[in-house]
Image 1 (tube, protein in one colour):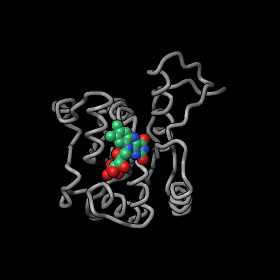
Image 2: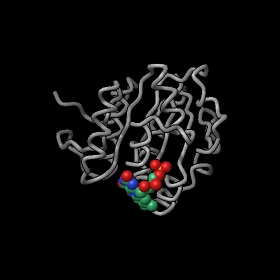
Image 3: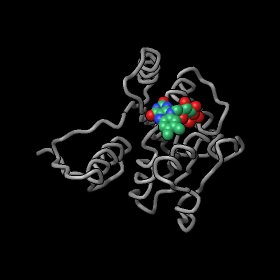
Image 4: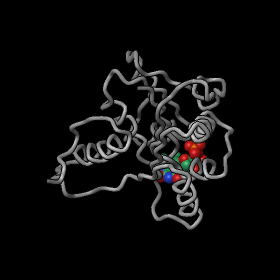
Length: 184
Ligand SMILES: Cc1cc2nc3c(=O)[nH]c(=O)nc-3n(C[C@H](O)[C@H](O)[C@H](O)COP(=O)(O)O)c2cc1C
C-alpha cells in the first residue's frame, strides 16, 4: 500500500510523526510538510523530520514546493492520503480546488482520481467558514476526522490518548492495528 501523509501548519503536528511511526513498515509513505508545519514542529516539539526518518527506507520526504513530485500526478498510483493535522488554510484551499503547493496538488489529484482521503482539521473553536468547508468536502466523499478524544478505552497518559486518535485514523484508512482497546 502507498499512502501520502501531509502535515500542514497546525498544532499537534507531532501526532502525524507518531502516526507514521506506528505504520507497518511494508506501507510506502510519501511525506510532505508545509513550511508552517515545519515551524509548528520546531516550536512545539523541536523535531526535524528529515533527521528523524533518515534511516527509514519506506519513507520518502518531499518539499511542499516540489510540484513535480510523483504524488502530484494521477498516473502515480497512491492508494490513500491523510492531511494530519489539517490547518484551516489548507482546508480552505482544498475546499475551493486551489493547488499551489504539493500538499494541495496531491489532494486535488486524489480527489479527481476518486481515491481515499482523510482530513484531520485542527482548530478550536471553528468559525463558519471552516464548518462550511468541512461540509463541502464531506459531501465530496472526503472523511473529516479531527483529533477528538474518546474516553472509553481507559487512556491514562498523553501517549495513550495519541494512540487512540492514531488508531481511529488507521481504522478509517483500513490499516490493521492494536493501538487502543475497542468498546465491547
Ligand atoms: C505553532 C503554531 C500552531 C498553529 N496552530 C494552528 C492550528 O491549530 N490550526 C490552524 O488552522 N492554524 C494554525 N496555525 C497557523 C497556520 O500555520 C497558518 O495559518 C499557516 O498559514 C498554514 O499554512 P499551511 O496550511 O500551508 O500549513 C499555527 C501556527 C503555528 C506557528
